[in-house]
Image 1 (cartoon, rainbow, N blue to C red):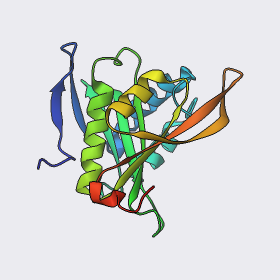
Image 2: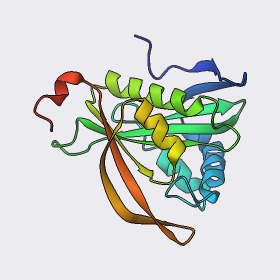
Image 3: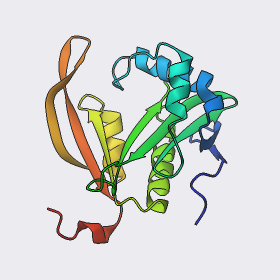
Length: 187
């Protein structure tokens, strides 16, 4: 099996190429720019804005590659997408990893989201995590279709959990068992 933390150049469906690799603190300027561009859209992620690059550096320094990882998709030096996972911190949830993913406008619908999700799931399996979980706004149909195509199932809904541009929107909780044997005894 290939190292899930490898740097790899991948060609997307539209012919553009990205390099997928783990993030480092040196990426703070570019990840800061990317998250603020996506956050400004207001409809895909909880964060609307990160106020300073030092906050971003602190966040980047929290990823250890063992219990947590942030993978970047770069077009040249520019971050155009990322996926992260944090493994559970308590003995009762250490088998679960929470996923977050962002893809910049202009890079959607070309396979980048699937690429990032597949790589983060690959890392999770290599780390021995048994279950992936994520939350998605009910209005984000494109992301929900992607997650379902990867085998995620809806596990719950937090009604009106977020307010997007003044409207209350449900947050859908989704999960994916990474090992079939882990399903025994699970409803």
